[in-house]
Image 1 (cartoon, rainbow, N blue to C red):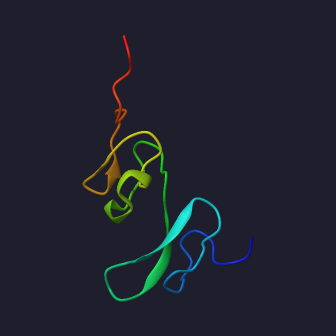
Image 2: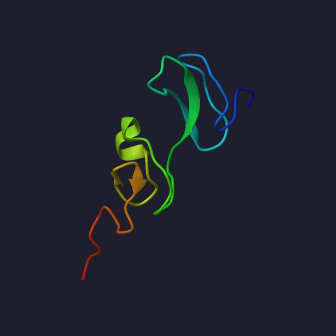
Amino acid sequence: PTGPGPNEPCKVGAICRGLSSCADEGDGGYRCLPIEAPAGQACFPQFASQACSDSACVGGVCAPWPAVAACP
């Protein structure tokens, strides 16, 4: 697919390439920000459950523990 890639500027509603999604950076500009980030990497809470691959976005970083408890 065509379109901007991760960390590239984008327009509202644009389809981003890779594991990224177009979002407001907070300064009025839009950029393809990472989604489904691994634990320990930066995340963006505006993506809610899509922000991290297998943990929760806490304070801008994907938590080092799984968001869903493992079954015994």
